[in-house]
Image 1 (cartoon, rainbow, N blue to C red):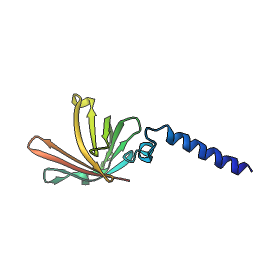
Image 2: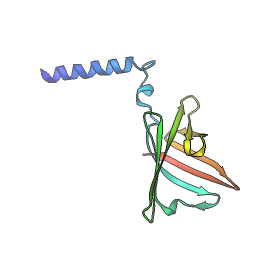
Image 3: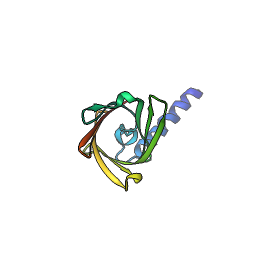
Image 4: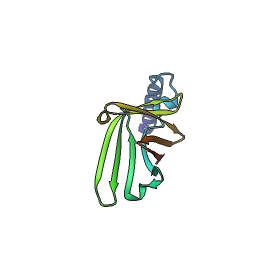
Length: 132
């Protein structure tokens, strides 16, 4: 009998949760872009610098903030943080980072894959991240 009541309570809670979220779509609740992304490639011009890192990870958090974590093969670890806005219609992320004078950059995020292309002087930084 207790199991039956617990199931009813869970269903009622889910129904309230879905009805309170905009139009109640699953996408509104789950925000599929949230989570951790691993860097799969990192090029500066023709130079692949991913080999110099143990990892580079990007985490998109619920409150519109991101953290970029990295560790070099020598053991140096670091973290950068900032803000992001996800545009569902255009499937893009716009990042802003206060340390760069509130520079805002927009990048495509489609099907769990984030592509970052940035001109840096005479070279171009190209990075690919995939959702875990």
